[in-house]
Image 1 (cartoon, rainbow, N blue to C red):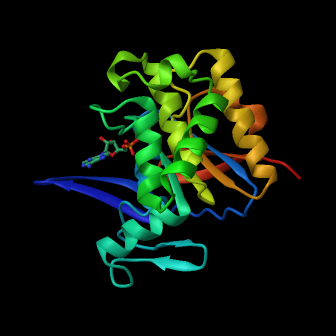
Image 2: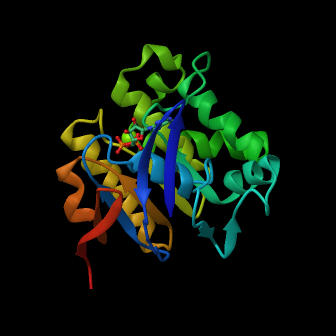
Amino acid sequence: MHKTYRIGESSVHVLKGVNLRVVPGEVVGIMGPSGSGKSTLLNIISTLDFADEGYVEVLENEISPSKFTDNELAIFRRKHIGIIFQSHNLMPEMTAFENVYFALLLKGYSSKRAKKRAEEVLEVLEITSDKMHKNIQLLSGGERQRVAVARALAMDAEIFICDEPTAELDKRNAINLISIMSNLAFTGKTFIVATHDERLMPFFTSVYKLEDGVLNLVKKEV
Ligand SMILES: Nc1ncnc2c1ncn2[C@@H]1O[C@H](COP(=O)(O)OP(=O)(O)O)[C@@H](O)[C@H]1O
Ligand SMILES: [Mg+2]
């Protein structure tokens, strides 16, 4: 894939022929310095943006503007792809519980099942019942990040795209999160994680470094 951003007269060629193949059950690490294009790449993989040249195939579907309308893509994402962003994109006027609960209702869960599932997943991420019903804005950055992760995991997607998911987490929570991902990967879930976080390295089944617009393989589990 190639991707260039154009702003007025200037342009930045961010991805210069990125090639990546990911199979179910992998936990892929994408490392690389700030500005190297990690978020750009993840946006394209998560179907939120398109490459200028080349394309992404997700679950045997070619993702391109000619094959999907925006609305169809939104439905496709909700069904198959869990997205965990740097910026959390949680609903600020809601509680932690409501953020997960309403996402599940939107996915078609009954109220009773959504409540049970939301509570279960938040507890796994150590958002305890006293925190669960607090407005998101009253939680710490790390707690909010865990709520965002809980929401994505609750949705039960096949593929999870995570942009710096442990940036605001202390060591214990970072290891807890990547361990949860690792365990889910054993059940066939797939994770693609952009990160600077060296603590996660041992948990990745493969690691790539994004440098000068291309991906170089750093480690692959055999
Ligand atoms: N929407 C955008 N418009 C213009 N330039 C962008 C946009 N998004 C990212 N860039 C530029 O593309 C490069 C890669 O950014 P990004 O993908 O965010 O890298 P990373 O996530 O590795 O820090 C940077 O030079 C950044 O300034
Ligand atoms: Mg980024």
